[in-house]
Structures are given as structure tokens and as C-alpha cells.
Length: 154
Picture 1: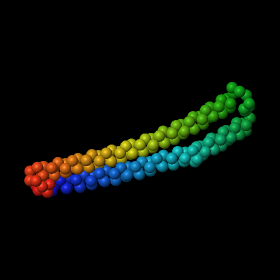
Picture 2: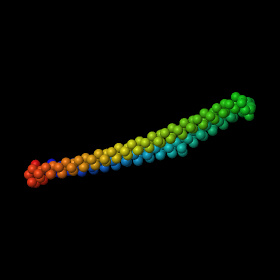
Picture 3: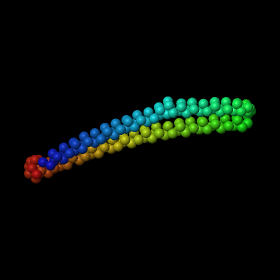
Picture 4: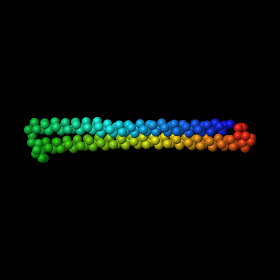
């Protein structure tokens, strides 16, 4: 009667595969949600904070230049080049932040995709174990029947 154990083992393997797939899918949903949270946090908290700090720094720099008595309107002069260089540095900082945010978001989504693929693999593995168990059980019952005329004999 080992064929019954083979069949039940196959059924258990299939259920375990589905359970593991559900776990991986849940973990993938969490990874996707974390990606969304990180992106929104950058867009709604970090980036506005960086932009506000840059604006404050530009304003302070401009006031300091005016207080120094230097002619800021003169194009090509040192104060103008300093302000231009600071503007370029500020834009570069925002570009790096945008890039890092995008890369982080994509990495989180890629992780979620890998988790879903692992889940599908677990379900497939369970399905194959189920089919193997059923085939093994049927083969065992058939062998029993051929040797003794009953599927229950050993």
C-alpha cells in the first residue's frame, strides 16, 4: 500500500509548493510597496528639503556678495562665476538624487520580480512532485495488481 503514501506525498508537495508561492508573492508585494514608499519619500520629503536648502544657500550667498560691495551684475566677474558654479553644483546634486531614487526604485521592483519568479518555481516544483507521486503511486498499484491481482498487496 505504499502507493497511497506516494499519492498523498505528491498532494502534500503540491500544497507546499502553492503555500511557498503565496509566501513569495506576499514578500514581492511588500518589496513593491517599499519601492513606492522610498520613491514617494524622496519626491515628497528629501527632494523638497534639498531644494529648500539650496534656495536658502543661494539667497545667503547673494546677500553676502551684496554686503561685500562687489558688483554682482558684472557678467564674467568672480561673484557671478561663484553663483553660477553653485547653481551647477546644486543642479548636479538634484540630478544625483533623482538618479539614486530611480535606481533604488528599479532595484526594489527587480527584487519583487525575482521573488515572484521564485514563487512560480516553488509552485512548479510542487506540481512536479505531485505528478511524480501520483505516477509513482499508480505504478506501484499497477505492479501490485500485476503480481497478486490486487492493488493493495505488497
